Length: 254
Image (cartoon, rainbow, N blue to C red; front, side, top):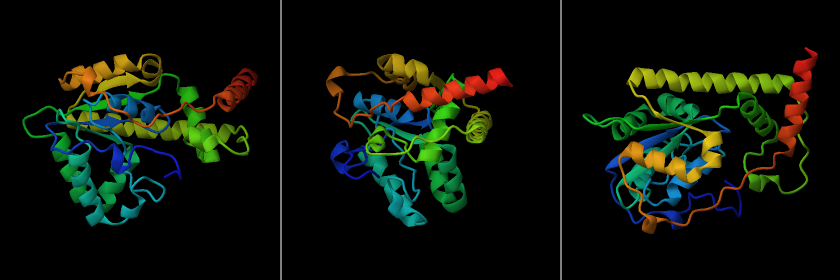
């Protein structure tokens, strides 16, 4: 968590509290603009608050539950109630590594999660966010991995711009492909065709993205239900543009 920065996990942002009637997963991989989309959906007041409630990493929002299955179980039950919007919709954002960590460390909770998201006799609902520009995606992932800067708020202060690295770029592309393949395998195994959204479209037309998710879930958006949520600011693109230019030069010289 970031000191002095409201990320949305704070109790002040909880809904009044109820059990979900419709649940969905925002499935994605890092650096797709998923934090921005999750807040766009949350702000409607009708699409839950799909944040990373299964992120128990040591630097994650629920770091205190790392290696503590009992606390993870309690947190899941708690967010199901606190983060369900008044119309009965609950959402959770997931990366593949978070589900893999549960598979290894808390399989009972993973089973309970799938029961909530894939109820018997009802269709499973998954919104899948990815990026069309694979090079830009890999650059973003590589730079964040090297620098440790994942949010705009971390850019303040004197930080050294990460030096262009073709090896880091190639590794990032491989990680993206591996995680994306894992999602596709899961969709196939579960016989689910997710609602597919693209970062570029969400950034250009966020309201349209929210309407697409609402239509997919079969819920109505009520303008009177809109809630205040923490803003997600776009990070500086200067460093990414420099990497893109170096990458283009390298390809021309190959």
